[in-house]
Length: 474
Image (cartoon, rainbow, N blue to C red; front, side, top):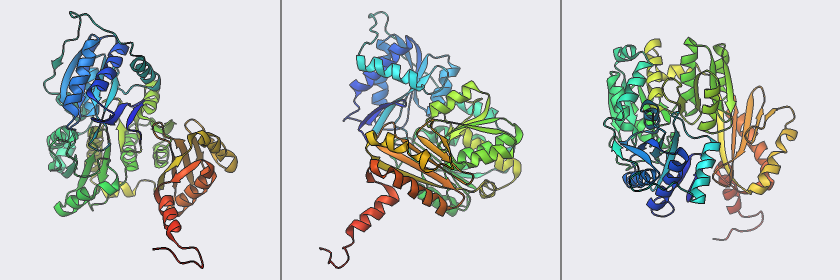
C-alpha cells in the first residue's frame, strides 16, 4: 500500500512519515477554500495522533475563514449527523478507518451529512495540489469552538427508529468489542440505554488496538471466546471509527460481514416494501431477500459515496455495503454501526429468536475474496476479455466487470489506491465459488505480477518443491 493515499475517501498516511501536521493543515485549507466559509464540525477517532491532527486541521480551516467546531472523540456517523443537525457547511473526521494504529487520515463530510462524492473530492484535491488557498485577513479568520456532548443527538436518533421498549424487555447480554476505538463511547451508552447487559472489550478509547482493527472473522477470536465464556446472546465488533459492524452469534461464531446489511434489510423490508441500495461487490443474498419481500435491490459502483448518491436520487428503505456497513436514510447518510446494532437487537426482540436462527433463514451463499498484484496498464485490456470468455453470463461494466449467472457471480475491479485487482466470487457452494475464482484468475494471468492469498500460498509451496528426479537444496 502506498504510504500516502489521497482518494475519494480523503487523505490517509503514516503519521510522522507521510502524514504530518503541515500536510493535514494544507489539506484542511483546501477543504476550507472549497467550502467558502461557514461552520465545520471536526471529530476524531481514538488514535494517539488524533488530537494533534485535529488541531492542525482546525488551524487550516480557520485560516480560510471557516469556524471549526471541535467535538473531540466521535465516530464518523456521529460527526456526519452533527453536520446536518447544526447546519454546518461540512465536517472533518480524523480517522484512518481500519488501518493499523500508526496510520491516520482526514475524511471529509458534505453539508448533507454524507461523504463527498468523486467530483467534490476531485475539486478539493485540485485546490490542495494547486496551493491556491483562501487566505483571510487577521480580523476575518475563523473562530474555533467546542460542542458539549456530541453523542446525545445520535443516541436520540437511533432510539427513535427502533422499538426500544421491546429491546429493553429482553435484557440482552451483549459483548461489545470496540478494540479501544471511538465506538465504545456511544456503543456502550446506546446498548445500556436499550436495557442490555454489556460486557465491554477494549472499551477505553485510547487507540491501543488489541487486535488488527478491521472487523474480519480472523480478528474476532477474543470476541468469540468472550461470547461463549459469558454465555452472551450476541457479540458486536466495531472498526476504529465505528462505521462498520461485524456480528458474532450466541455460539461464538462470526456470521460474516456480508450478513450485517442482509439481516437489517430482511428486517426492514418485512415491514416496509421498497428499494435497497448496495454496491456491486455485495452478496446476492440481498437480492433474494428483497425479492422475498416483493421489493427491489439496485447496485452501484463500489464506494460508500456511490451507494449514497443512489439513495439520495431514489427513495430507499436502507442502503449499505457488504463490509458491515448499514446506511439508514432517516438517521444519517453514512455507514452507521450504532443503528445497525439497534436494528439487529430489535429483530431478535420482536421475533423472539436468536441471532443464529435469524442467520439460518437467510439465503445461503459462499463468497471468496482475493487480491492480486497486477500491472494496471495491462489489467484494463485483460478484464475486457472476461465478458467474451463467459458469454453465458450477464455482464455489468459499471465498475470493472461483474458477471452474473443464475447460481453464481464474479466481480473484478482495480483498486483506487493500490496496484491490485480485487476478485470476488460467490456461489451456492464453496467449491463452485473457488472454481469460478480460479477460472477468472487464469484469464487475468497476463496482468498478474504476483498472486496473493490462497493462490500465492500454493505458488510458494510449489516453488519450494524439488523438481522430479532432483534433490532439493537445503
